[in-house]
Length: 139
Image 1 (cartoon, rainbow, N blue to C red):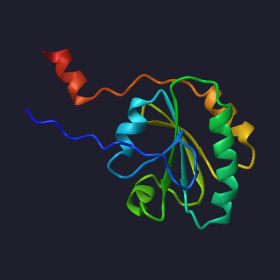
Image 2: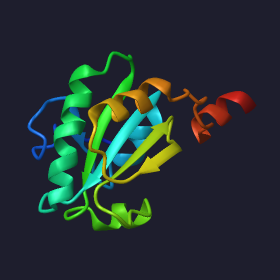
Image 3: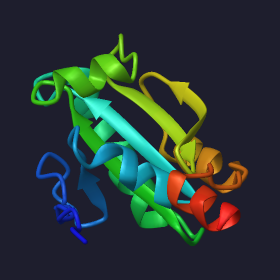
Image 4: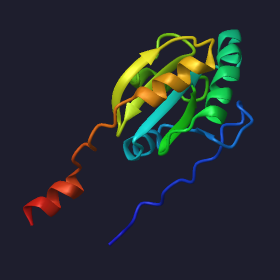
């Protein structure tokens, strides 16, 4: 039996805090699928709008009180294919997921309280069935 090596996530250096993890094409799906609620900021480090939203995103992670919430980011300059796959047309963009299922998306956020409210009010959807869970059901 072989196991796929899981890539350890690192904090995204653009934000300078340990609570916002940088996602790549090979870590994105697993990460958002395993979280009750995940808020992902898609950004370009050179964009002034990304820099503006960064401040509010960081403050939201520091004031969030809800458990099992993940904050992550995707650098669209480095992860162009992932951003295209996620239909990112404006930078920055925020997408809110529950167990990998898209709940909402929005553009520039200039108030951390809006971010916190969207996370606090997000419903937790049941996890999507995987081939592994389906195999257990049929055996």
